[in-house]
Length: 116
Image 1 (spheres, rainbow, N blue to C red):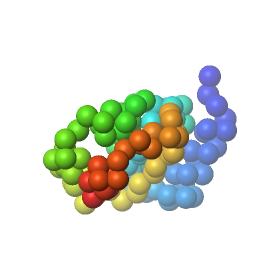
Image 2: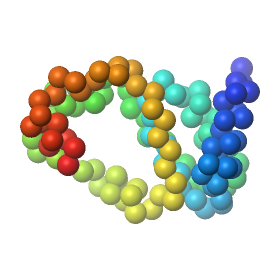
Image 3: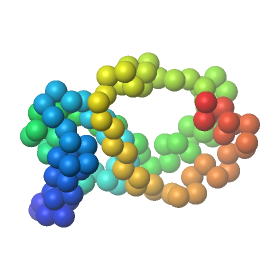
Image 4: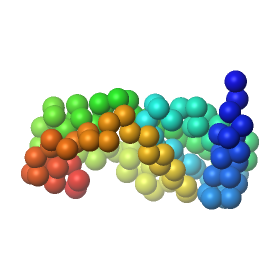
């Protein structure tokens, strides 16, 4: 069942806040918790002619990465992220954390490597 609040919010984000136009490239970053809202934003962005790249993260993804990755992996920058940075015309990040304390146990050195 469609959520009228999500639909109206999506219209506001796409047409007013981001002012998307045909040919724009929108990158949406969020977690799977925001899928209902992302669906409406995705639909609205496509309806105005924008191209959309959704990037969804799953529960504990960052925590698993920070606990498991070696120093080289913590510093690695994805080539697709580099390309995205050069081509996107609009970015939308929806904060929908599974755990607001995720990463709190990360040591200072490892947190610094990850932040680079």
